[in-house]
Image (cartoon, rainbow, N blue to C red; front, side, top):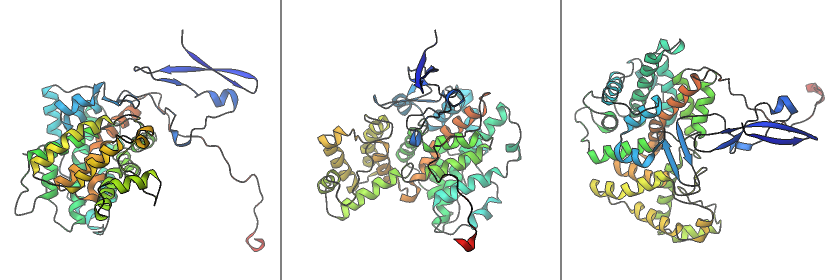
Length: 428
């Protein structure tokens, strides 16, 4: 017998169906509530509202669990690559050798952007933020694909997904070069996904960047760990735009805009800025933590705590273990890492932070690694956008292939003025 929930309103009892997920998550289906009662539910910022049923990513914030299509993130990080993880998320299964070869071939085939796109880049000032340029250029890139506006079968979707996933790194690298006043560097067929991105970022016209395999693996891991994270702000934005039947590139562009915010994708940048401030003041972190605890000067401990995780972020566990090896292999001695370790150790043994479940999240160490590779600060969120692209594509596909999908249209509780008359301007 199907489970139901009973709600008593105005002396009447209403039965609402209960939905159970495959991992035991329970939700009360309120879709018919307004029709039956005239009421809507209120949930500011949607923190306790399920907006969809999805097969892509599972998170248990209390237990610190993250799985892509059922596979633990720890296994993916240990044995997989970003491209393979992207295939898993987008197409719902791990690829066999032939499928992975084919998809990798499509990424290579579509990595070049249309030459006319160069004129678009020339229209941006060198002071333009790379995220602004990236969002605009993803949308512009869609204009060069006429089939985006028509019906799309499985083969067509695979090509569009590969084109977006491949070109986002080309557009990102070109955006960086533009802000630095440097000439664009084209991708090379001989390089794999992440290696090619570093080549386009740091090579010169007369000399190729010497790609360090440790740097490649570190950045590929960062991409993989960010590939999807359930219904976060940017992914929910992609799904909302997709519900209007907008094309894939337009939806991804909207996702970039949502990700740009400092409360979302800008968090790893904020960690570095916090650590640099501590170093400038000659502090080892002790004074800063006291200021945080006593709420002095508006100080906040960036890179700790998470909207979903009430335990250690499993991605942080992975990247923390990797950060020491990366810096050692790259020969980098970063004083910010020493400060970061002191902050982490203090926070993990201080009742103030433990009671508030402020554990380190993935942003805490990813910024240190990107800094060691040579990624500039204002490109941190761009790296996040490249990594999150598979999740956005997978969620876009889920919306578009749902036969019962409707355009997203949240309700509101109006708190403005009641009915009033228009006053002519001469009488105001």
